[in-house]
Amino acid sequence: MSSTNPSKLRYWLLAVGAVILDQITKSAVLAKFEDYERLGIIPGFFDLTLVYNTGAAFSFLATAGGWQKYFFIVLAAIVCLWLVNAVRKNEFGPWGSWGAVMVIGGAVGNVIDRFIHGKVVDFLLFYGEGWAYPAFNVADSFICVGAVLLVIDGFINKRPSEKETAEGREQ
Image (cartoon, rainbow, N blue to C red; front, side, top):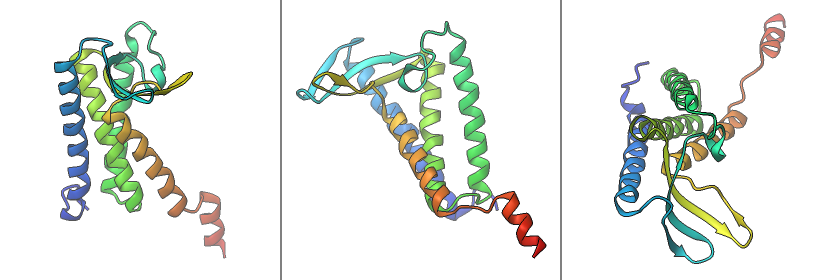
């Protein structure tokens, strides 16, 4: 089945929409905020801010010296190509297909940042008394929700293992 199949168009539109929404929100924050500036939206709980992440989730490898930019670009490309192929070949159920395109859209949004800025733009900051969740962005949200949908799909559409398949053929 072709990746341009009309029934799959809605999936690809979500991926494109995720990239567009991510880039629009980042552009707005970059235009209005100075680095590390914060604007309280819900005092004591949620601020908009402008920070950068040279690493991955939770600043993983953020201080690695620069090579990580290329590593995360290549990793995102590999994951996206694998997910595009899996959606194209109907390897997921609907939950997994939605999740896959959300991960693709989020990954592409963050890769664009790495090419343009050399790092990822983050601006959503949730915090409370004595705790703070690391700042993140719309792309990160799509990636996280997409990953959860992929896990749910894995449980719903569990495929038999090679051993189970071989046992079935023997019977």
